[in-house]
Image (tube, rainbow, N blue to C red; front, side, top):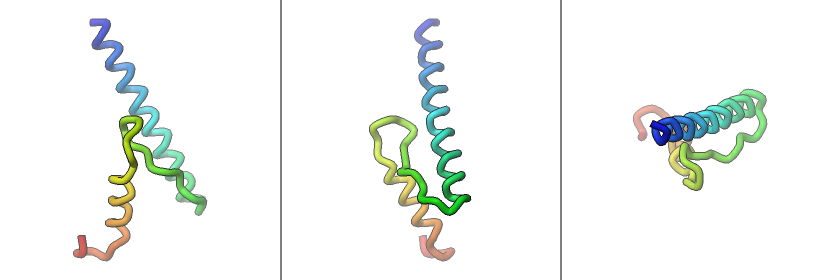
Length: 64
């Protein structure tokens, strides 16, 4: 039971980290400031997937 509780706490901390980054990104974007570098849900992973997603959104519809 203690291991499950520890896993839940770690998961919540990772989610909180990502949520804070998302809020910071939105605030910077809204203010017209440079946005922070993308982060992944898990530490030490690249944010390339997020960057690719943003680049796809900039393309006109039907050109994915």
